[in-house]
Length: 326
Image 1 (cartoon, rainbow, N blue to C red):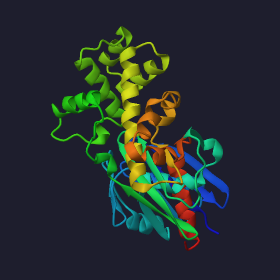
Image 2 (image 1 turned 180 degrees about the horizontal axis):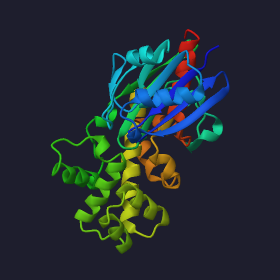
Image 3 (image 1 turned 45 degrees about the horizontal axis):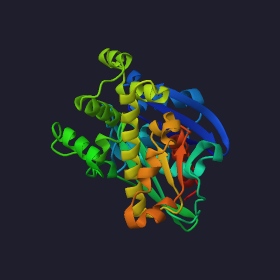
């Protein structure tokens, strides 16, 4: 049997993996800026592998329509049908990178999760997944016969719904800059930066080393998270607590819409990097604060995905299904 190719194509890096059954034949990471398009990257990978796959599935950071994608953070137009012709692969399927996360959930091992709410998932129940990173991705999967249907959405761009006076003040602050404020404006890496700036605008003073690092052009979200973990800057701690509360509230909103007895899974990178802060309380408090339906929402399992290659595993899983006629 010919192998299958899985890819996770991000804005800065791409992971490619060639798989035959349970065996990984080749696993590589590429710097996207080193290539003018994905075709040449794939040619290099396949030349090293010395094998041509039967099926390829690429999870791509961007909207996919008719097996074609204009990458969100790259000057690439990726056409799956064209790649199949150029590379002599029987089938090349493009999927959104967050759809690849959905496909990857079932491929993860128990050690690839960290529970926030340790309830046992119903294997026949719907699953919700969301993840804060550069933006906020959301989706769900529904078990269907012997398989499942994976659906992604643009729910991260839904309207921000503040729940108390402090969150209303955040909304008012962001409305000074944006005509409309989505959830993604606070639940993402840039969202952490927005929350830090809101607190400074409100008169809070960050630790001198934090202000200096940010003034020197450092990654604000990373700096804030680092000092929140160290608990040596009250502004950073408060910014992450706000972030976690907004994140939990949105996860709870998604849970109300999906009723995910199969679990709520957090992907996207940030949650795994600040796992200790996610376990500290604000996330789950906001997640379960749903009025008359609080008890129901609190019954759903919540897990953080700690395996950074969940999208790659998902692409491989879908490719294997396609190769076997699924």
